[in-house]
Figure 1 (spheres, one colour):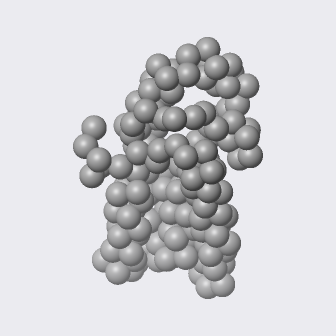
Figure 2: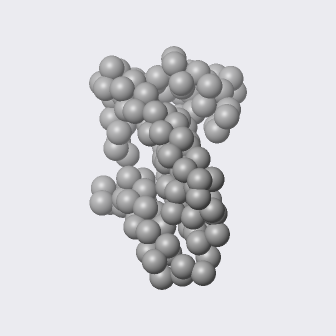
Length: 147
């Protein structure tokens, strides 16, 4: 898998599409003010998840890229979900789509998470299984993929 096609690229494309939909399809800007401001709260939660995950990756000195992990993180947020970074990205995109009020933009977070589920998670899980074996299987049986 090329390093250029990584989840943060999909995140950026998602943000761009949401903004484009806002301007190109104004007739679908239906979430009224001040309700659209709830998106700020949702985005902050998403960025918080992402930040906590990133901090754990740094603490354990393991990779954020699609390469062999040096350690398996099971503490903190990883004790509740196996994919906190993706949950954070999803919530950030969802929050931005709510802020921009466009109902078409509300589809983008769900397309994002489906693409992540199909394109990235199977590769990551295979690498984790190859690297950590039974320890990863035990973790997988104990902790849900999402929430």
